[in-house]
Length: 362
Image 1 (tube, helix red, strand yellow):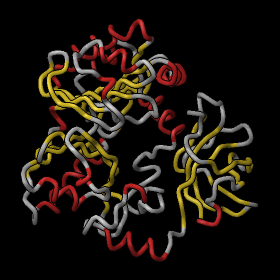
Image 2 (cartoon, rainbow, N blue to C red; image 1 turned 90 degrees about the horizontal axis):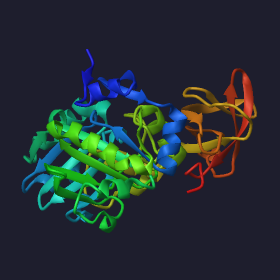
Image 3 (spheres, one colour; image 1 turned 120 degrees about the horizontal axis):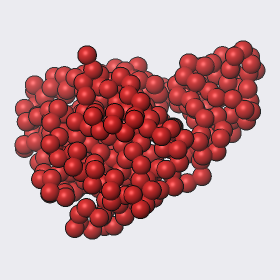
Image 4 (cartoon, rainbow, N blue to C red; image 1 turned 30 degrees about the horizontal axis):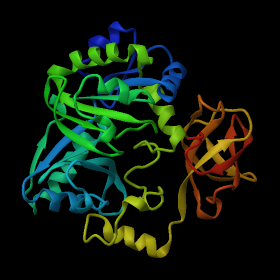
């Protein structure tokens, strides 16, 4: 039995196509994937992503726990800042990719992928047995809206006295937002556009959703679903857990060395990641564009002169460029930008090129 977000009845009333996703009934599209995608690129779209998980970590031991379970260096976060990070396992694989928010003093929030909420909670809890930080899972009582696009700031600004123009990327601010107390507004997102993620209690979300839609009417704001969210993140080369990264992929193989601070002190998986760094990864996650017409899909073979190199982990048609784009792991010797590869689609090898994300001009 799938769970429902607090906006389920709103989505169905808007005619959204609902699908089961990560244990929830979620809107995959309203007007259509391409319409919604282009709204985010050119104006604004609003996502209900209340299926995501939120854990509060607080108290004098909070930073110690976060440093032990995450790959990035959370000691560098001052109040009101967030960082992208991951939870490595003891073998150096990725339990999940997450965002850590430093709300104030010794209070942090970890946002986990919806499909990994229980897994992440159990993993962090296990490490916390020897540390003793205070942990609270607020996922069930928290809703999350994301307003994304060039017009997002103008829309959200209508509902608050906070000067949103002062917020840079990966900033966050906590307080009362449009009558919703203890809300958190963050400039984190998954689309490559200016995004405001609004964390709030469930009982406020319907009113805020409706008021944002009304405020955004003149700016072209429309509801957007998971279909557009997927193509938006893929154009940017952002990873999706379960597709592009998992328990058996190393942050180094996934190109996440920049969020893996091996010199910050001990953390879960550090020794395994350090060993792989010294030996040198054998494979790497690359982004590619098709040079011929076609749509790459997950599990399609990546080949080079008839030899299978790997498989596509994420693939689609870019609504912006109308090119086939995707990601997948290939041996290191074929991972350089500009390398010519082929994607096997219906027994035909179509020419493709390894490129540096984003896959569209930004």
